[in-house]
Image (cartoon, rainbow, N blue to C red; front, side, top):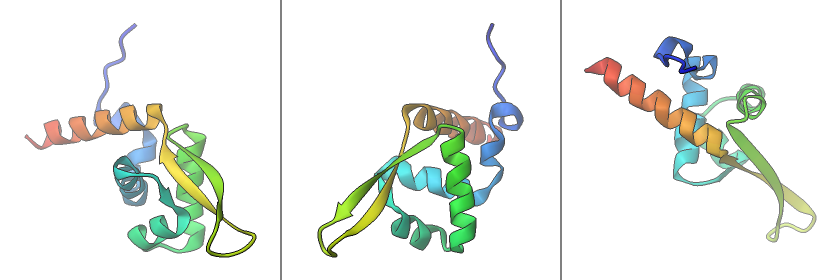
Length: 100
């Protein structure tokens, strides 16, 4: 069964400008939490909530890495999953088509 994809039914994840910004940023390269916070310019609470939603949807994943600059300090690296990349590309394609 083929589902007819539209902007309205693709995913409720993309009803947030911050989540779109996170996804778009991660299409370029994996980023740390601090880098995402600087890009999105939102509070920690808001960024955590948006990241959690994207993880819950299976669109991004993370791993914790040791920061060699600071002893015993770890940082979190976020990256798109294959599903996240495919879904975001489809969303952007539909968005561009709706603007024509």
